[in-house]
Image (cartoon, rainbow, N blue to C red; front, side):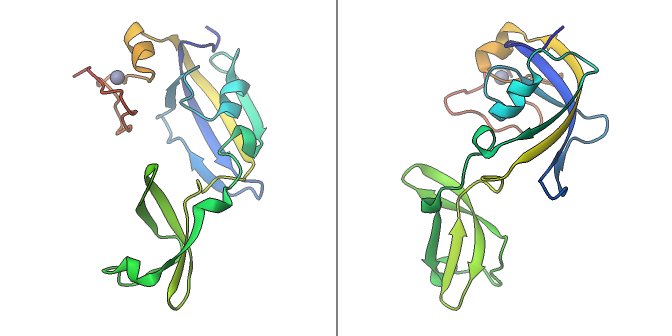
Amino acid sequence: MQIADGTVVAMDYTLKDDEGTLIDQSQPGQPLAYLHGHKNIIPGLEAALAGKTSGDKVEVRIAPEDGYGEPNPALEQVVPRDRFQGVESLEEGMQFQASTDQGPISVRVVKVEDDNVTVDGNHPLAGKHLNFDVTVQEVRAATEEEIAHGHVHQESGCCGGGEENKEGGSCGCS
Ligand code: ZN
């Protein structure tokens, strides 16, 4: 079966940046499964996989606009250090939840100065080229329920693996 909208794809993958640094990978024997055609993975990778079948290997370099987008300078902000009361040693790279008008977002500390802390709410991979090395392990037709929910159901049931529930998608499969 070929990868198309409405198929479930299981793949082994590694993701590296342009320097060759490993950013992410599937664990051996635990391929990542996703529902194709529902924006569950980044657009550039979904496009590269369309039409492939099990056993195919795909190497693709994805530009930021087809990945996590370009960094938005407005998401980088300097905030007073006293906003971080209770945090003993504030260090670059620490992650916090910040509440915004658009709801909670995850921010990273990028700079710590005496009284000021610079935080960045951009995705850590924004602005980066993404080098994927993928082996397609399995392609199957999605179930009607999976298509209705817009995500893969694991053998163990709904939304396995600690996936976040999509907004409004209260998964009725208990
Ligand atoms: Zn579900």
